[in-house]
Length: 122
Length: 405
Image (tube, rainbow over all chains, first blue to last red; front, top):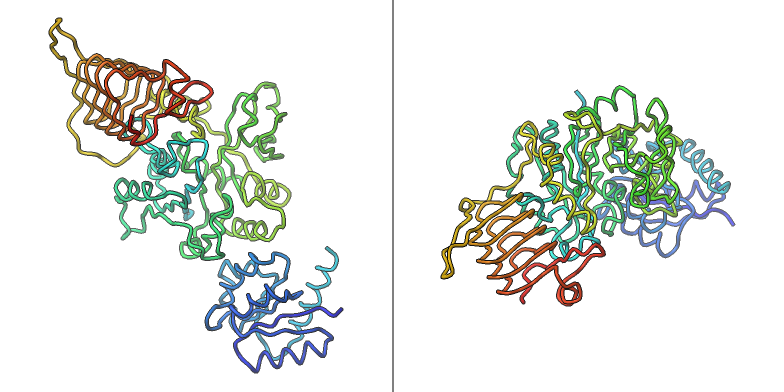
């Protein structure tokens, strides 16, 4: 079974781009466009990993983190924001990784691979 | 100078103090005639020059809120000094506080706003006098991530406390939660060190460890049970032995978690050894001031000669009137009225209680607003008392607030 990755981002282009790239890598993907949709999916269709944007309408990523952990403590979360300033926010420390958005998705893909490998070992 | 924020945990249910906690949170239970339990901890902060204080509450907090408003609305927010109450806000998740650690975790936003270097985590239900500055200095000097205040105690109380094993350099080796066989102090086989529930954390370590705890599968979200034992493996955790700075002995500290402990701690205020320690003029315990008439102990002339009012070895708050009655070894809160020929011995009587004529009351706690009719006996017949009141194993009778006889 390929790992299922939940992509949470309010920008359609980014969701589309990430989905294509991750499908190419052999993962399954599910998509949410804000924190609220993300929580719905975590409840109904729990993924193996979440890629989480921060600035989103309705519910932002930092608020979503606390609630994701409350529903399911075991799903790794990678924050993927265009801004590095949220690293100062304590709730961002609850994520397993913080990757600043870039056109090059190598760092993100590498981190996904590492975190999933670590999770399989547990 | 390190920037310090105090967070006082005041969210416990206080079930073992029932019925005193039927209508109020444990830190708001009246104490010592004029105070609420939490006044001791907040006064310690103020006297230690720590003036950024959050009180975290959740259950039955109305009377605590009101008290904090009345008694502690004295710091100047303009200079960044405050005592603020924070209720459980469901900001991070939709739960109430699940434990001491969770209470801080759920208030990350507050920590974020203040960005202190150190967080002083305190409990709102302890009676003691302590200068936290000594502990902070030790924390800095030891280059510690966490410092835990500890004190010596007889090992027979181990089932009630967290027991701490300490190395010579004061680094904490082991933590046992309420053990039946505690680790004793080397050279003192009857003594142990206990965790007083007073913690100083480096803020960044606190945040990291609380997040880790929140993501653990089997956790009770408790500092003593979960967070600190886990930190012993990863962080520099030191003990700070609590020594009274006047007597240079182990200081006075009581966790008033049960009715019996509450009763004993009150009665301690009448003892020669404790009273001067707690009521040191250099270390004032502040509270809200209630305007009331001065205490009146009145004689009362009766047809069979003269009787008189008398109060022996007691604490009487303002507004009390002892009218031809006898009060002995007792603590009276404001506006208690005791009528002729009555006797009140070894008891705690809270605000606005009226005791009629020819009553005999012994080893009782009478909560606010109770009106006791003439000729009532309390504390003399266990079975009769148990019908209308809570009676503890040691025989203390508690008459709940506003009981109608």
